[in-house]
Amino acid sequence: MTLSDRIQEFLQRLTPLTRGSLLTELERLEVCGAEIAGAAAVLEKLRAELGTDDSAQNRANNPSRFFFAPLEPLLIDADPDHANSGRISRGSVSPIWEWISRDLLPTMARDYAGAVNKLIAADSQREAQRVVDTFQTKVIKSLENTLGSPDAAGQARAKLAVYTTARSAYGDLSKILCVLRARDALAKFNDALPPKIAEFGDAQVSKVAALLGALGKRHADALPFALALVAGRLKTPWQLIRLASKAAPSKNAEDIAATPYAITVSMVLDRLDNRRLALRVALKNNRVLVAKEILTEIYDTEYALRVRIDQLEECQWGKRLGDLVDATAILVEAEVSRFPDNVGHVLGSRRLRGHQSLSGRLTYLAWKGRDALVGGAAFCRKLVSPA
Image 1 (tube, rainbow, N blue to C red):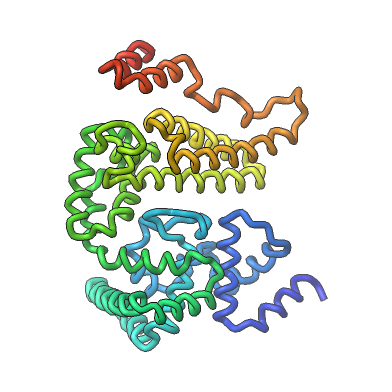
Image 2: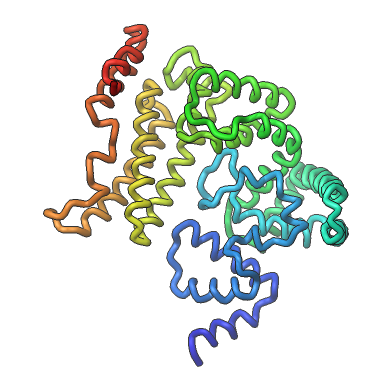
């Protein structure tokens, strides 16, 4: 019997639900860069059976896609067990839908799916959206009761473990409840943002802060998700911290931590961690040019945080940044060490750290001396800027 035959025989012994859960888990581990012997062959078989699209959520039927539509701008393809403030792991969506459909509200979910399918087939989009809104409200009320009771919450956690081994699924369930509660306000906020923010300067920061303030008055717990929507518009993701630094009386880490937008620093660190994982995957697949782009972003983000937050090294943000940079250095050193000493490697080039140029060093000194020399940073940047 060939390996392909043995895999097929094994999969046929599993129930459709188990096969779907297995595919979700293997794709989740694939995103995390985990190496599992023989997983590629199993993935190929399961994808052939359950759909041709590699994305578990895109394979989901229309009712689930409509239901989770408010989450789409907030979903992230990353290790769900890593911190992602304001973000929801895409890998958690499919198991949570299975839990809603089979355990939380099975009868209502079945009726909802049937009604939406009929309306979609009849091209009645407006009526379909009304059905979606009604079912979302029912799920919200049910989740509030379930997560509000320690016993019921424990049972929900145990049930979710049937559909996924990701420890973060329960946390993502709580996030989903928050997003669904504030879905209309978040949609309005998202529509008010510029399509793209090339430079997050003072004027843009003030406008976005006003939008965030209005949303926060009614949905304070949805602020991280609104910030994630802002981050998605930024050409330079680390600039999200400018919301916190502008609101602080000084650039001291303690003052920034006391602002309503202090979480932006953690969110930038979350992204840095995800980029580190992406770097590991790129190196494993010998995608050196992709790795170079990722590494450049990591270096630029590290530099921006260290320059723009005073006494960073003395707080938890600084410790986490140091750990992430050290972990990145280990990846780079392992890659560079594969080549002889007399052979250069693009990842070992000092040019990746663009801020090490004369312009970068002068800017750094200007930023560090900005409290002593009013306008010194702007003056220094003017001196070293190209004509």
